[in-house]
Image (cartoon, rainbow, N blue to C red):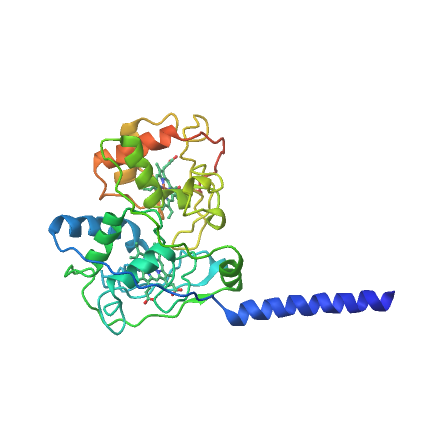
Length: 316
Ligand code: HEC
Ligand code: HEC
């Protein structure tokens, strides 16, 4: 009997060791890639839309404060549990940047999460599976434009060293998205709640303001655990936890008692009741128009309230 237990235990250990080695050595999985055709646009309205989204969605990770270009940086604010993360150069340099990526390859990465060599980009790289076709084309058109933010800069990439947890999550929890089966339209801008919902999901407000990065659902954001109920724990540049506030209309623990005016001002400037109140990683969204910021407020007021009191990070 004892012998059987001993063999059983040893077999289990061997299986666990095998699984560990498979994940540790196998690393991040790769998938087959498609190369969709995509026509870029060069009109100034499209490039302005692209710049606006890139500034709000990509610059937070890919902009290097020294070069003022999208040459990448060390992400001191990435949770340590995910590994050592450096963002790559995504300027148009053909050797070090993405100058030789086709528009379709960039589209495929942004939609599905698969890089052009097929390797999956882990959860710390943004994915845009629900953004409208027009807005995602605007982003790619901007990345291929003459704007100083993206002109070729010969800055080599620093390595990304994903942790065991990241590798495991990309084997069991995070899978690439499929390319959308039907066209995705920009919402009717006269419908404030529809527009606000579109922005709150696609500017990824929900990803920080829900319960946990690990339980976010980018394909169906409303299904993320604690959708907009706050409590997620992004880090600041010093690596300190900055718990996210509850943005649901709950009056006691959310923003149910905030006026639209207070919200718009806070979102666009970081100022609440006359004082700078919102610290990194909550950067002001200066690029939003008042109408867009107000639409986000109206959307948030329309979602189910969640009672969740979040203790804010202490003042330094
Ligand atoms: C939260 C941080 C973060 C955000 C936001 C982000 N990225 Fe990334 N991005 C990364 C990281 C980290 C990698 C490297 C992933 C890897 O190689 O495993 C990456 C990889 C890439 C690559 C592949 C480059 C290469 O040489 O392999 C492209 C292209 C890219 N990002 C474009 C974008 C665009 C466009 C946006 C905005 C829509 C964006 N990223 C937003 C972190 C981010
Ligand atoms: C990278 C993570 C992150 C993203 C993305 C993000 N936020 Fe925040 N947000 C935070 C953190 C952290 C705080 C708290 C900052 C502090 O304590 O100083 C905050 C604070 C706020 C507050 C103040 C709430 C209060 O009760 O004081 C509002 C309003 C807000 N965010 C709205 C938004 C909206 C709208 C978006 C999308 C357009 C967004 N946030 C995107 C992390 C984020």
